[in-house]
Length: 248
Image (cartoon, rainbow, N blue to C red; front, side, top):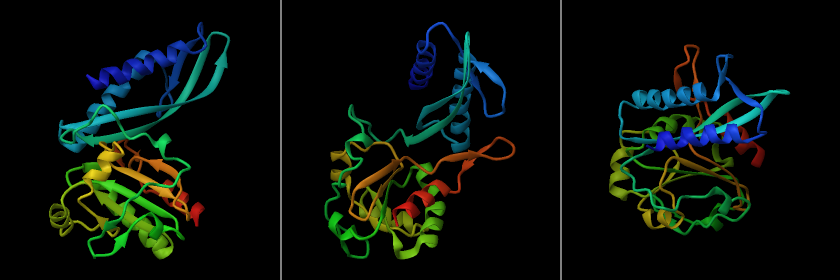
């Protein structure tokens, strides 16, 4: 049902701009298709993601980023890329949702937490260095898949950046999970009150803070990419690495 709504919104958006000109989309493979075919391609992508994740029990949201590349008197052609957000359907999603616009260019309202290694961390203790805060949970497949990439970013930047991971789940559950998974961020668990307070019900989310604790950038997960055979796989995180280096 959500997929149908997303596709319908896409078609409506493309057909309502510059009325009178037919819209076409240039696909990743380079072919030009109409909006109806594009909607079908998008629906197929959702099903392909589900098959890769080996479960139907997930929520998938695809945001279109269109760019006009050609205009004639009777047609418009767009290229596109997708922001794909994958969440676990077991996580309750309320009427309200996390809105990045509410936090960008403001100090992030991080309360004081005790980390796994008994350190006390709050927004003031993070100031002086850029910070990446990752929100995750133990059964979130894209959260798990991006962990090795995030570890690699931390290895490259070392102590020049604060790397914080926060989960709403109980500390015992997170600790047990991390015994078998390497995730080298400073770990904070049992943060449900906080994640609920900011309406964060879809994961992963990555928040970039500057040296003053100001939110500069908010992303979902590390972007998925396509290999030579057009199969989707986790990206290398170069966008995240570049964004953090700009904050140093």
